[in-house]
Image (cartoon, rainbow, N blue to C red; front, side):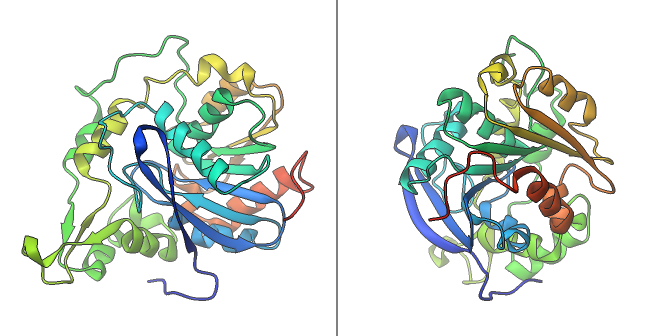
Length: 303
């Protein structure tokens, strides 16, 4: 398991996104241009801790917990459109006063970054998207629940454990979580779970998922209902796309379709990695990011 140390992320309070939802912010430290990290569905910003440690010599890293995840509030407005995640990204950029930062997004986080840049062109100096969830239909489909394996799997997800240690051991023993870097998994257990209040029958050690299974399921139901693909041509900043060579999700064929619409794009296939690459091998993914952004193209000067 991981442990707190001098390079652990520092909470930076909250900002308010659309619908009045408070969004949790994190400062991972580092030296260089500003770099914002956006996590995948069901996770939280601090799972990037091992990755940011590999990037400290090149960037000052920040993160946010998307609504319904980590330290952010639940989706009280029940608006599960992925465009709202883009709102969260833009709210974080504004609150942290980031001037044309670079950004990394994993899965849903990659789609959220593309949607944010489409909503407000010129926000980012460059994007690195690892297997962004971007359907390649020009007409977004309605939310899909029936026959959606990810939706159904989220509803079946175990939400409570007698302790954080028990949660860690559970996830570490089964895929896909067993492939995660141990510290990334521990940060998920640490910041992606909350202590069950004793008034609800907890003993002060029992924990439950902050990202409620029913909300995660709705996020998956809406995953193909956004229009990021239709508007990719409006993304003018450099975009580095990557996937794992062993992925079962958004592989090279998807990235090539995205690239056909992006103004400035590169594609990388990282050997030995799956869809959870940024949490599996931080060193390899950091090397990809550094190659994409150093020297940064059009990035703001270090603050």
